[in-house]
Length: 175
Image 1 (cartoon, rainbow, N blue to C red):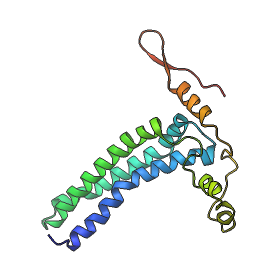
Image 2: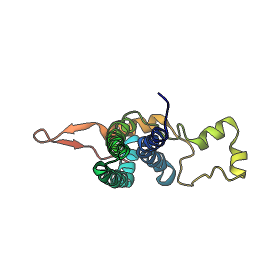
Image 3: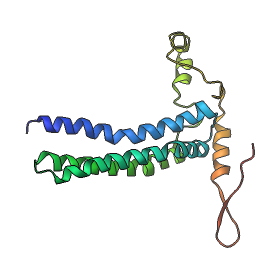
């Protein structure tokens, strides 16, 4: 059981493929607060889906497509690599779009929770990080977050009412 060059290369590639889509979608979920000032989970979920889901899907399709010709190769390494790549891309897409985005919607961070700017401010590192240019405050980013309001807004936005027949209708959010 020694680790060979092929396994080492495959391991690096698989790690990259497996986290790539989650990082992109998570970044957009967080960026919704910074760039647009969106605070509720539902709003941030929609922003992330609208701005990154098509890009993630396109990346998955092109990478999956690039691996397909490797199945026709005669050298044993290439069909194995093709199987590894296509399987990893398939599961990564499934879990990032399904599980991860679902978890962001259900239990994702609200407001500035887990925001590096906020953490730096709370532990006293913000002045140092701002002066070296590591942190930059966006004027659209909320300075004070009241999690109770965010949770209430999410609850109202996601609580369906039954309309005519059994059609689900959502209440419009009040500003």
